[in-house]
Figure 1 (cartoon, rainbow, N blue to C red):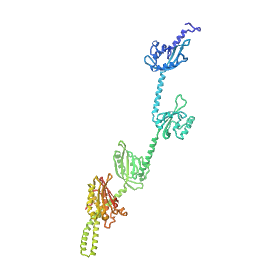
Figure 2 (spheres, helix red, strand yellow):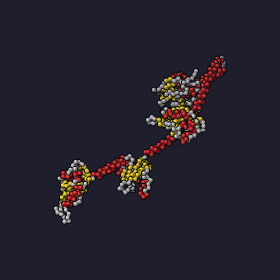
Figure 3 (tube, rainbow, N blue to C red):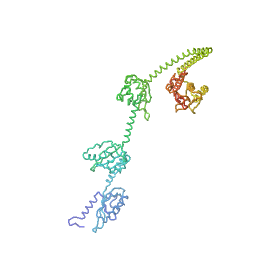
Figure 4 (cartoon, helix red, strand yellow):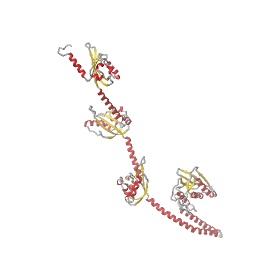
Length: 631
């Protein structure tokens, strides 16, 4: 090689070029047309993992990742280096002899002879591993972001500045009925009802022009149109996102379907209205307390009774309210009761307070603990029942009972005083009548019968006036009916009246005073006997009445009960019989009620009168328990 005419040394130029290639950080290779390495720079030792002398003579494809070899061969074949006039750019993973991998971006340039034939290929490879790591991280972040958005229960929609939907997450399907792909590309107004649908483009145009909006970075409630045309109520939050490098912002809208919550709120409001309607219409005084005794709620009845307003008392300790202000002994007692109720105890006592007019009112007051699902006391329910009238009635009743007892005792003494003289007069009249003529005898007999009636009236009056003493014992309904029928049958048969007995099978026993019940049934059978003509029918029956009662019925086929007499049928001394005292039915009623039952009269299935005695199956303590007619 000789110097050039311009004084340049070709060897020097070659040395300079070799030094440049060896000092370059990029991988530089020269391969023959078959792909055999004929030159590699110093950087190749880092890339290929072997000394460059050892890489010479090897195929380029020995250093390409096995998964990328076929793709690289296909790229070379499509490029056609023998005819190509331009360079090939491609990318693949390079695997070093030690197994290290990196991404390399290749620029392949054909080197030709003077005749144009392909002599070799020059390859320059740039390490793009850092780029791929960043790209991989970016993709992982993008995947996480997409997964985050897709996994959100609330629908998320991203729009551009003109309202076109760029992204919709999977929740739009479950909430709005659209598949995400159905929304992307559409204007977001497809989700809006009027008037917002028609005005939304104007909202965006005004924002682009003025930068003013009333929706960004706020949560507002809107209606959203479902795919099926129905309306949902959603809370919408919109934020602006400025993407680096993009000239236009994006807007992210997050929707929360609150339709169920709104329905629940409406139902709660209706429930509150119903509660208030029931709570305020309660006849008794009702409230709610916290466990420390603070008044939370009170009904209108209690407020009006004391002439108070709700604001006067709610939020205050209950014992400091006006209901207890005039009862110095009441407040300490109430505080003690609240402590007991907060501990789970039901508390009840009588209290006195003054109403709006200043009159004293007697209350049956109670505190009931209200527990949650874990059994802990969370509220207290105070209730007050105005028992002023009840106590007054009880006082009057007590006075009346005392008076009746006095009358009964007086009647008993009077009966003993009168009975013997009446008996003597009756016997004397009979004796005199036997000696008189027929006309005078009839007159004396009538007088004797009147004396007998007077004696019977006094005896029945005395019996009714005396208190009752119930001697309860288990008794079967069948035995009760049979005993009453046995006692009445002789008189009924003499009068030509048929008696039927019907008793339902399997009836439970009653706990009662059998003698008194037989007396009541006997009175009813005697009434039927007196009302029926010869050939009449009487039925005596017993049957179950639900789970708690048993009925005893006496009915006949007679003329029935006179409508004018029905309202006062069971009152003492009320009768339509010329020889009756009017005490028989009153005594029946009294016996039945002392047993905790009731009696009613009406028209029966046989067409005549029907008397039904309804007796409780469970024993109930009654006011007259423990008393029986005294001799």
